[in-house]
Length: 316
Ligand code: UDP
Ligand code: MG
Image (cartoon, rainbow, N blue to C red):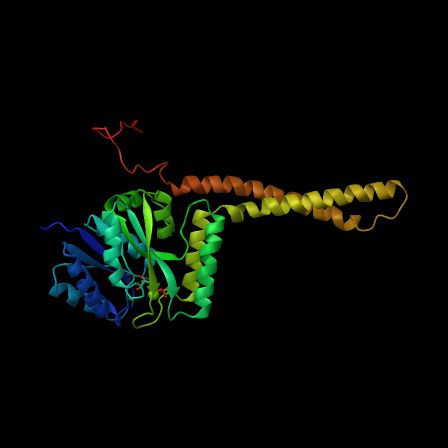
């Protein structure tokens, strides 16, 4: 069997309106690259004619492949599966709806050949999306960035090229709520951006209704940030300190025989503050447990020089 240099992974969920055109555009671009490639459609439990159309496409071209899920497992699961089945030295992930123009791929390949292991597409502009989507997306990427210590670039989606080694590193992360772009940032390696204008969806409707978008944002935030867990520590500390100071003032007033209004209120508030503080402490331990539960490796090795064998590991 001929080895492939590039694997293009396309998650498809009810994309009957676009799959043929996407295939045509992708094939055109990949032919132009002039090296062996494969295109892997990952059918994420579509209920329309997508699988039938994809199968027909695959029968007509040996470089096309179809991986069909038993049901809808979600976009991130589809991308993960595609990367695991990919045989290329570089894996390109692209949406099926042509919002990410395939014509950007050669520029990504160029950067990969220049030595970068991850080349992500950075959206300069989003065409044809609602104001609500644009504003919430902008806000989301910035909030996420502010809340996490992992360097997750803003305005980038899953449209990106990953070196084989990066895909292998991603396989060592067993966590279940996968926010793939965050994980790609987490593993590291040399990364660069290629800028592009995000087009309008070629046809069909978005497969990310508000409900899915919120789950997605929640997954991203909770798997890359502990700050929400620490929130109650800050609130608790503020409340406790505020009430303690006020009660001291009230005590002085009472001792000097002047009226001390409000202490009846400040006392239970102080207790609330202490409870919040205690919750925050629980949160910190929970964060540590969560870290252990995610079972991410301690480190990822990008390259070695001078070793002629894998490290000796203590047997468990
Ligand atoms: N998708 C998927 N499973 C889902 C939802 C979406 O595989 O449950 C795919 C979809 O077919 C498309 C990509 O993920 O290729 C991005 O979805 P979409 O374009 O609808 O999202 P938007 O661009 O509107 O955020
Ligand atoms: Mg889209």
